[in-house]
Figure 1: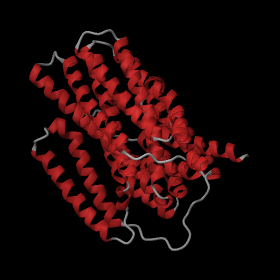
Figure 2: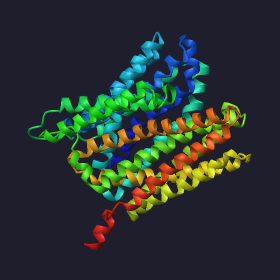
Figure 3: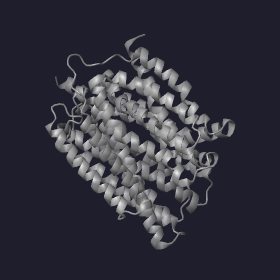
Figure 4: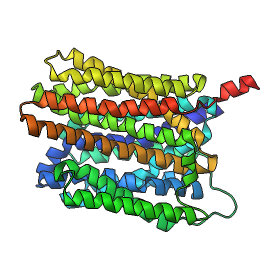
Length: 464
């Protein structure tokens, strides 16, 4: 096998590892009502099937990113692959809702092992002149999972029952594990390996879990309720202790000096805002389409497909352009387009035809896709090679934090407007939420614009 072919087979294997968690999340979100009926669970209980998954995977991403740096990304990644397939079978065999929630939490741990090391493996294998293109190609798997998750889940559930949606990971995972085992080169560090920072990892997990739990439940409990404020205060204290501990460690779990790099810290913030906008759109638009426009769930899903389909088509192109032009221009362009798309989309308060919803959604997809691959390449390129695992973990944690933050902000604005104006003003509530989210996108655009340009490999070679 030629080197180029080998690289892209590895890319395919890693893409499968990104595909499975995204597919499971997309499918289970749609099938929660059916799972609730089958397992005789109330809505409040069954919601934890997905909520706990997001909370756990976010909390342990940095842990497994750091373990990848210390023990080798391939070893941690393969353990995640095998574990994800095994826990998928456990989810499919769950006898009750409580057991399903427990198995999904275990599945989240293995998913974090995959997500925290996937980009580090690709960044190490592909040269800088091809990194953006490779990351763009890998992101196709996530957008494809989001696109087909709903229809595929409905088809599998109707033919074989809801448990089959977890068993689908068996054949996919078997192919990915075999390819990863054979083709990903071992990267275990030589010499004396520092001890893993257990205290730092525990403090970070508890702090992030408390923060995300507060954001996740704030619109239900109330932003000023005692549980929400207590969790946020606890998270602040835990993060404060975490920073004090990490500054004194010779081998900290999270190298805080990474954030002294403007490119790295700015890219992390912009990524969090970007993913928050994505989550907010998928939270608000279904309410508008189904409750505000009286569309069926299937019709609303077809309208929403505009966004991931455009992202799937544009992401590889954006990654390739960032390899040639540098990453700053595509990221600023992407976030500026996203701001325009969100503002056009916020016109839903008026009676507009569906094509005037689909077109801004497609524009948002163009903005997301133009931003994500170049920004990921920029962030990972700013991290030293021996810190790429933890950098990938930081990026993945920013993504999940952004998701929860976006839903929390959009949900709070949406429910507040409905409470003040009445239940028949869904289009108005959706409009105000989207305008608020557009501010997050504008913040990310300004942050990306203010970051210094990092010369790409082609320009460095040319100047030399």
